[in-house]
Length: 139
Image (cartoon, rainbow, N blue to C red; front, side, top):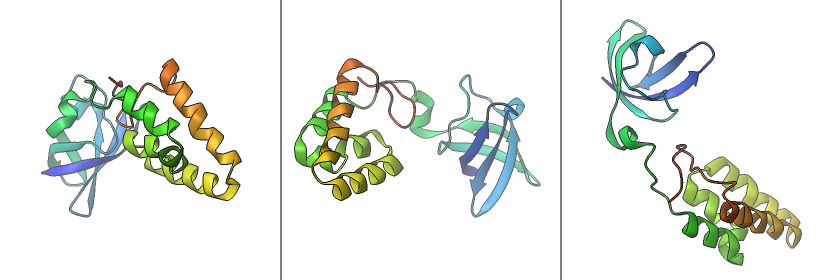
């Protein structure tokens, strides 16, 4: 079956996969990849009741550690006033919830809110923001 990882707890080493509106639990012992499970990754698995076994990553998630997003693009999106105001860099990096929050904050605070994307742009430049939402490094 094909599904998507909906949760993973590193402490208990268990997670949940959703496939066709059904949920399946899995343990890291049934995980066949050298990297830990990542939420929202597409996986192929065998279903045994409510348990998933033989869980394997499929698609682009196999190379999830390879840089995909550009640090320069993210920094420019943060520093340009219009795209920074609407959290363009957060959308670009895949942090959608934070992008919505940042956009609302910028709209509510009007002039003061533009400081947030400027600080983010500096943090991207300095390497403090160096991963996208899939935890891949920036180019």
